[in-house]
Image (cartoon, rainbow, N blue to C red):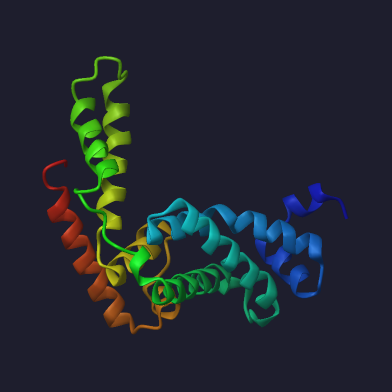
Length: 197
């Protein structure tokens, strides 16, 4: 089969072929999820290098354990479960690397200065596009500053689109705990974004 044929396949077909030791199907499957895994881990860790390392580890675990996936329909939540487990393991091993973003940090101060200055930037056309872009940065910053247990559930719900049941599975929590954490995360984000929205 040609690479083009693999690219045209549905995810379920790629999973089934991967489980039958079709390495080209597995390669295409891994490529198809790489960006989403990286984005999730970037939001969780707040660090590009760390997110890259954790993405590689997650994708390797997906490839090694693809045969253990019992239902292709659960693939997305299964991958997110692996990614969050990899993240949790790394945070336990490297607690000092995971600290909230501080306004004392010079890079973060310059980030907020840039946000303040952009409102008076006459080069920004159309202005709505600039506001949207800067608001995205502010939202990402506020998400990164949520406590870890809130950050994980809000990312899995709002960015990955997982159901409460899938998030409960990915985080080894009850559905009630997931709903509570999401509600509290949303409340914190609304409070922190009042000045911007």
